[in-house]
Image (cartoon, rainbow, N blue to C red; front, side, top):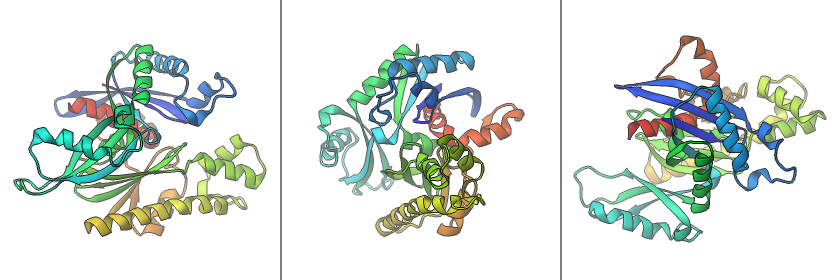
Length: 344
């Protein structure tokens, strides 16, 4: 199965296979989106939609060819800024009536007309054997126009669209093992937006998206030091909040602290409603490798904080060990949706 994440910073592609109970990383590849943007019209607004379908499909075909990926079945990860997530409870009812009840309740939470979106949902809590207990539903709505664009990209890339899946589901599957019963908070720091996902008992329970993007960090360093953006990006990646340059660490702390507040607020809300404390913090996304970030989160939140490796349970050549460890935060969504295809 091929998993593809069309991100704002890069397009990531992975090819996975399953033999018995073991998973193998067959191939992977990526291309920086900045290389695609440079080929597009200068007045194209990056945040308005997907990258140009023509350029994206061309880039995907290039990755597939360069990586020698022959598999045609693909699952795309849908970014959080294209999806709407919520959770709610419905009364106990026969299985055949649940889809209708979910659709009816969805109309109370989604601003777009139900006819303009496609719904994906999972039962995230129920009491086994108790037919009188309420069912807790986690719902994702994706605009039909977005789905159409991904269908066209798959076709133009010469791939067979197997499925589409919300990024939050893919990241959860890639980073949290199904037998992990802890309450975990995944902080996904992206280039265009960031999300906080709460996982409990192996199930995604909450997903919140907010307007923080890692490019802010580089732009702020650029302004603080009066240097070009590319140089500021280099300082961010290599030095992060451990930088000894005057003003760099202070600038980054000012931007990062609101992320900590988001996690504290969401964790407190989850405890108030579910009486469960977040036990661990997972960092992922393009800025997760920022030097000093993991340690700062651990110290500030008083929680064990880690960068889980989404490739850790795969078979691959040992020579790739360090490379894949560094790549893991950026590839979690692509790996997670491909894994979902292997499990069906």
